[in-house]
Image (cartoon, rainbow, N blue to C red; front, side, top):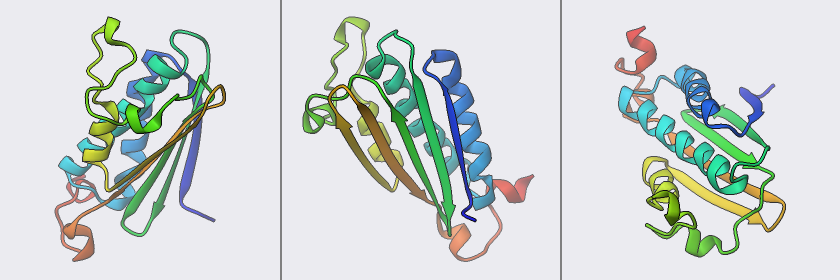
Length: 153
């Protein structure tokens, strides 16, 4: 059986810290450093917030979060069944936002790309969006050295 977990939850802002915490707890098995776990939590926060703010825009909806641990890599997929993205290429450009009226920075996808090892987004108008990202944990895991968060516990 794969080392994975799947969670589905309502797209409300109160669930964003919950999703971030669940992923952080799941990835402890990969012995991340504090910086690595912070990167993952930030990327998850941005992806879940995008679902809440853009996909559903205040309407009811569900977010699906899937995590898989493979070797020294954490794979994450965050999916909504919201309105979808018109132009993905434009949406991933830094500072692009469809919600400027709410003082959104348009940096969510850029942050995900920066903090994760791999990142991709796919979307179908009226059907939803899926963000797939992974984080390969660093030299401490590869050399089997101590220094990750799990070693500190």
